[in-house]
Image 1 (spheres, rainbow, N blue to C red):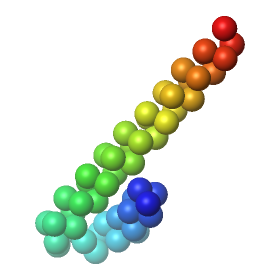
Image 2: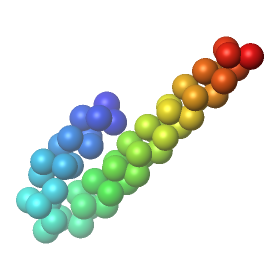
Image 3: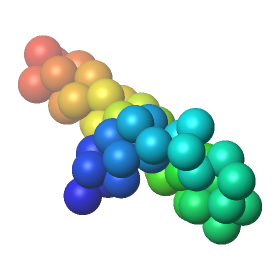
Image 4: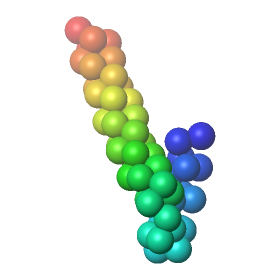
Length: 53
């Protein structure tokens, strides 16, 4: 779902610049998407470290 929001915002960002609400939603969506990726990558890295030990 986050990926869909991010893709829609990325494609329509220029068209939505006139609408403050959509602009805010896009920014929040991108931040959530980035945090989601970072947390996922960190959990994978930690999991690999634990399995190596």
